[in-house]
Amino acid sequence: MAALELRDVKKSYGSNAVVHGVSMNIDKGEFVVMVGPSGCGKSTLLRMVAGLEEITGGQIAIDGRVVNDIEPKDRDIAMVFQNYALYPHMSVYDNMAYGLKIRGMPKGEIDTRVRDAAKILELTALLERKPRQLSGGQRQRVAMGRAIVRHPKVFLFDEPLSNLDAKLRVQMRLELQRLHRRLGVTSLYVTHDQVEAMTLGQRIVVMNAGRAEQIGTPAEIYARPATTFVATFIGSPPMNLLQATADSSGATLALDGAAIRLPQPVPAAAGKAVQFGVRPENLQLGGNALEMEVEMVESLGADHLVHGRIGGQTLIVRAGPDANPQIGSRIPVGFEVSAAHWYDATTGARIAR
Amino acid sequence: MIERRPLLTVVRHVVLIGGVALVMFPVYIAFVASTLSFQEVLHVPMRLWPGDHLLENYAAVIAHGSSQGSSAPVGTMMVNSLVMALVIAIGKIAISVISAFAMVYFRFPLRQTFFWMIFITLMLPVEVRILPTYQVAAQLKLVDTYAGLTLPLIASATATFLFRQFFLTIPDEYAEAARIDGAGPMRFFWDVVLPLSRTNIAALFVIMFIYGWNQYLWPLLVTTQESMYVTVIGIKRMIPGGDAAAEWHLVMATAILAMLPPALVVLLMQRWFVRGLVETEK
Image (cartoon, rainbow over all chains, first blue to last red; front, top):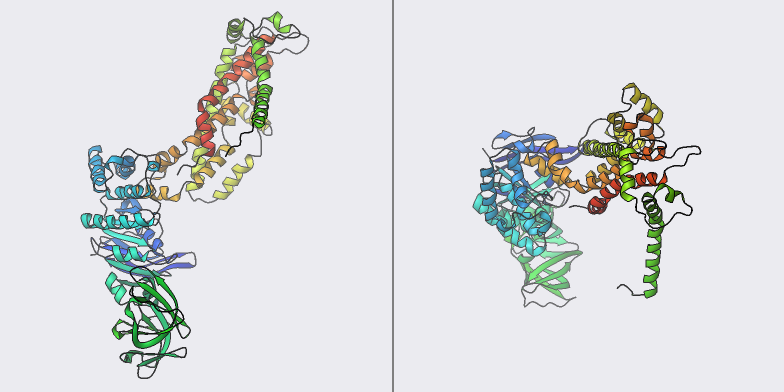
């Protein structure tokens, strides 16, 4: 019995379907991240788990119990909002104690729980302050404290780090990981930031237009993306995807008049129109697979990103700090076939190798 | 950078002092008149510096009223005015805040219709509906009662509208967080919405209090006994029609007394008043 089960969950607003049948099982203590672009339905899905949105189809079960018609307060969940949603007129202590007070918990126990959470989140000195006297990061910690004191079965996070500046975001990411390791509560985390997804998630759900395109560990998703969407969404700079047609032996790709010689033939792609994907870090300058015309070089300090053109399509190669190709020159680029990904040209689905 | 232009500063001050003088001069004259004796006040031209009958006049008027026209003690009338103003202010706020809450946080059939109905009543001042209102009040035996003075004036479209607009600015996340915390709608209203509305309530209290205190036409209709009169009616009634000379010094004393409570309320709530109209609490 999974801690949180989504069974073919659907959501429509009138005739407008926003979530098309998402299913997944989350184990107890697992940290799952739902990632995707704006409008992909991840927040809607989270809110359905919280009980803030009606479920149009399918079921959501927490600890084996179907919660479709159960009020948020009875689902044994706690949520951390993007805008923190701290009650502005209450002190930090009262904000954290509010949910427990409503449940009629005895004062002594409330005090213990709030102070324990404050200690874990280093908020003890701030307990009497009002939210407007806190910084963004502190407010976010209070929001997390409010969720922790409830000792819920599931934590729900709705893009909690989006309102923080970049440096704070990195800090809070590490704190979230530490927190999860310490508390071990099942967590469902929504973000549009693929870096957060890769670093925080034990498993990632990549969502696009209301569908879960792939569910897997960060390593799986990075190494074997199931669709072109997942391939280009995860990884920065994104994977190069080139439209090409393979010849009958699967040894050469024809691409807008140019040709790519594959180091080894790939029978699975033979004769098909494919999208051929290679990550910038898997391309090397030198080698003899293809020839590209250099358009621009971005220096990142530790690497160079070489932007180039082959046929009519663009390509990015991640090269070491010593590389210094001339703009406008044609340079050879090589790669390992094992590092290449093959996708159907029309559906974007992965072709088995 | 603020330019220092001495001429502009002088002009600015002249305008301000001029404005204050224009507004305060009549009040000053009324105050002076209230400290004079009957003879002094009828003397033409009236002197412009205070006399020495201050305590005498005020004591007389509070205890006995004027001997011309109405002789109701102003003390009683002040109490009536106070009751009326307080009940109206508190009643209006209580009713409006809960109606606005219902309109913003609940979905029920005809919600928009009700909102527009309330909004349209804004266009009907008391004077327009005063006859039917009096009829109803009379039939319900509310004449000459505090209930009759206050109930017909207690619903307020202005306050409802203002609270509705304010509630619409409260982020939805508070309601969602409260829902997850386990607060029902009324709990949420009491614990979150009301505290956030504090400054709005203070501002509206000042406005409604002054409104209630200054009501003339409705109390005039609905009260017939002198013991139920309100202060503004008292002032009018002290001025007898015809040839008899009004006891202007007592009338002016009553007028000054009538001005004191609203002035006090505004002064005390001043800080909250401005904050309530301007502040956005996040």
